[in-house]
Image (tube, rainbow, N blue to C red; front, side):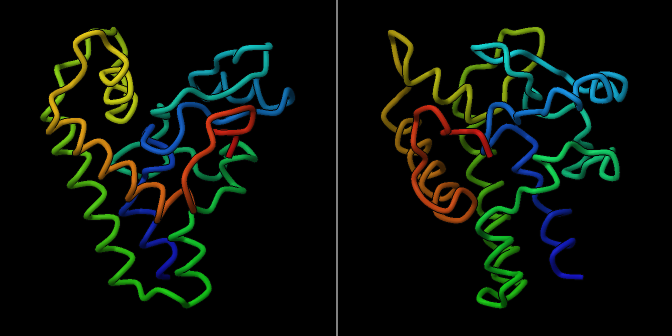
Length: 168
């Protein structure tokens, strides 16, 4: 089926490119921990899965049948457009490939992460923007192009940085 083909080629909703965390219901925490998922507490104590999800293997969820509710409920804009027949599969896959190419180029332009657990590319790029030295103008422009593509095709529009900004 074309929808599963898209998701199996993509993985951006799980690799930290779209979200830093995925909220969990309180009754999902114990199960998530038993499955080896990285559960953290957000500000205010709400449980969430840190992204990049440890269940992501080669752009696919290795715990697909047992994934949390928010993961089950999520469908990016590109997925929704494909499901509605407004975008053909080959065009959707080309968008995914373009997103991965931009992320790879951005990754190469950033200094390596220093944390014990590697941070997702977009997280590193956003923090580089906040650093005292900041990224090069080329890296900043590449981050902005990547962000725009992710916003247009995966988030469904520019993200709102506020209370519910990454709660999808």
